[in-house]
Length: 116
Image (cartoon, rainbow, N blue to C red):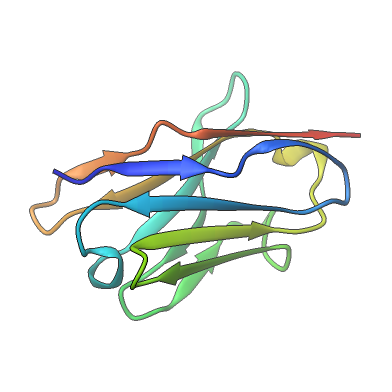
């Protein structure tokens, strides 16, 4: 079973930066698609960034140019570097993946709060 543990959230002011980390159990980071999702208060959980097995990355329009997803295959960790943060980036950020058996896994999330 895959386990995902996020960290790095916190309270920052608008315009500042944060980097989130997600440690993944098992040697799968390089072999599957990894995602970061965000859930704002009272809203659904939305895809923010994705890194595919090939290394191709995709971003939600609202974060493109400000957020960067990356991975470290040796550390089995994915990162989300967030710059020029805005109050609307506030939410709980979740790490997500689907294994080879099509089972989906979520971390418990890390809270990011951006004050104006």
